[in-house]
Image (tube, rainbow, N blue to C red; front, top):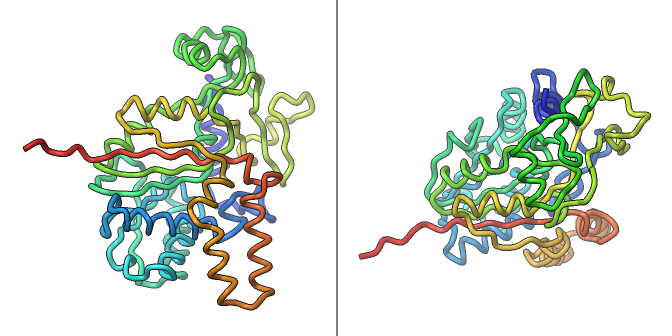
Length: 335
């Protein structure tokens, strides 16, 4: 089978890693920005309010998270909107795109426990089911979770059992490899379809996603497995792929130039790529901390400050992770 099919089975198959609820954080296989601090979602809430004030996002716009897993991220966004601009909760529409029924149910239960009937949450299995006029899309660590093909000096990989063999001629993979100046590494599969689905789903939107990688492609393989907070290179001679298959996370560095091209090809404007540190500071995470400092005990403030430092410090998540932003604006009618 092609490697992209193998990776999709690993992550999303019937018994795949993401097909059922997984702990993230200290008790799981890895940390994310969402599991690190509620102020990650809080900063997005502050940004959403700024989009409303700017006039780009309507007060009845759709707030959509893609690949929400627990639902904690969107819940944190809602919690901070309630703190900063509670009236918006009466008009904004909240949506999660989640393919797995079990995870949808977990998210529904979590929202009911957190908000009761105050918040109405709508689920769709894919962007193809969503139709909105005005919206804001958010995702965290989504582009590294797309299946990929593996390329090495003109040949694409196939998988026999759990053994990777480079002996396939694939013109599409080779074309992408040449475009992004790679003679080896991962070529993501599905960015183009995903971008087209989002562009079709909403007439006007802003999309922000956080992930690790660089604008230009890495010159080597970055594919790796996360298990119990250990990182194992996929091509490590000691790795037991059959034992790790579907029981651990598998991921790779994102080539953001590929993401950018996929969106621009469907008429969505690339706005910027920034480090997570710069993006969160510009969107107001420090102002949120200042509000907290003025309203809680010093001990609570200090605890939250330490969590936020993990989000923005260069030696933690701040430099490693990037934020990419896109916008699609509604075409104006010519009178």
